[in-house]
Length: 146
Image (cartoon, rainbow, N blue to C red; front, side, top):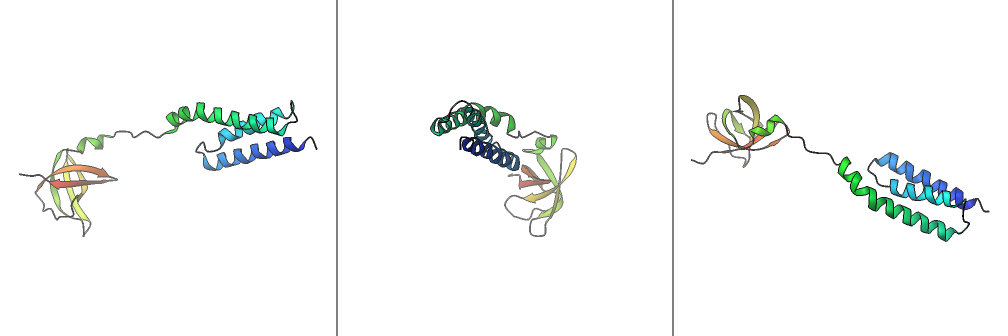
């Protein structure tokens, strides 16, 4: 059965390609490359051990060379928005901030935002606060220390 290794390598190639297509996270593409080269090696050698060695070497080299490059281009970058300008600024509470009631608003940089207290204390309207962070569409604030 000289064709058996070719069928095995072809099956592994298809399996690794399907796993990669399902995950889209560069999980098994390296092994698919190794299986492809091992499949091609079946035309030149009948030794299963040589084919396995080729599979392992090609997979390792592909992983070592391409993973850092792929990680560089596939990692999502945080994009700064104009909303980031509000962090660290002082704001005026326009609606009492009460985390338990889920209410509160502040005006900062000419824009009204939904706001929550960072330490769960109630902050009355008219109070000056500092914007600590943004989570979704809410500003988390703390009273300005006088």
